[in-house]
Image 1: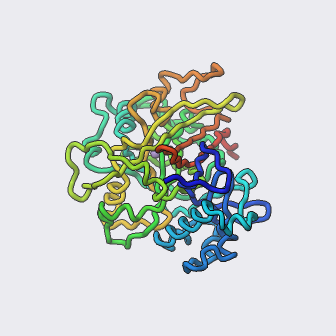
Image 2: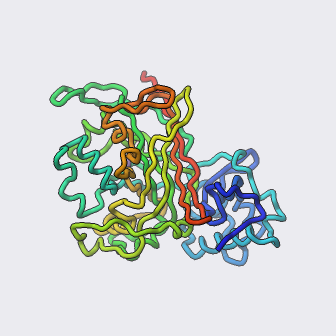
Image 3: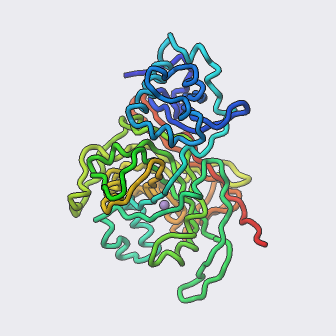
Length: 416
Ligand code: MN
């Protein structure tokens, strides 16, 4: 199947006719509302709904005039499929209402993007075997980097939803307790080990009632879509605080997500089998079918005064634990996931040293500094560095991408 449109879409665009991701945008003349990206444009779905584009399908206009996607997500998967199909037909067909009313299209360069979802809860997993092994070596034990539970369950911690921000939001260097060497008393200071984590995030699209687990075979239907995610981390703060209850202030100062939520339907062409799991997992975690995604990921670093360069290329296709297993495990005790919950994959590292998804791994915790094209060295991130993440799947001429997730490091905020 090859789709083409009367809109001129660059073949390299992340936002092809196969993608149609949802986001919240505003412009000089438009309040925040639901939009859909196509090529270098945004379709104003609120205005499109108002002129009757979806009137045959009992989709209320109001859901598109919200400053989050939550009410739209709440409509359910059949309505989402209708909206997607109508817009796809409108963009491909010659006899098109959208074409007639071109005021429904806004140039992305003239729009401001907002956090797409009102995030209720944020859970971050730890599902890359390579990442868990690398971090285990650095933080704990070079001989036995994996803890005994790791291959039996998708390990996770509860993050903080309130500090999830949209791409473009800068992050101030946090302060905290830092222990200089083992046995020493901690001091209070700025982190000198600020890091990024290359992750993808799942947006939950269907709630489960408290007490009712979601089975591994039903889990797919509980996901609305995906974003890129940068789990900013302060490694020195994390290292001192994380035993025994896990990450806290080393992580919760900021987490960034990309503004466009790519629907799961658009990612079907990129589904692949995950790696074999050995030892065999418990029955409630046994999933079937192509549960992983073949997506090209990259991270670029731009120093304040320099030019951007790619410092990592990775892919989530080899993640040990898949999303169905994560949802089944998260809810197996009756815990309820809600519409708008965000589930992070955890840092996505591959086996090649250029595929490590954090500075911690790329520089071996600072022991092997990275040399940038301008001659600058990095152990961790410096003030005014900008980290940009990009992701796209490509199969034949079908390209589906996530756009950019970008954030600049700013100096620590002055304290009184
Ligand atoms: Mn993380």
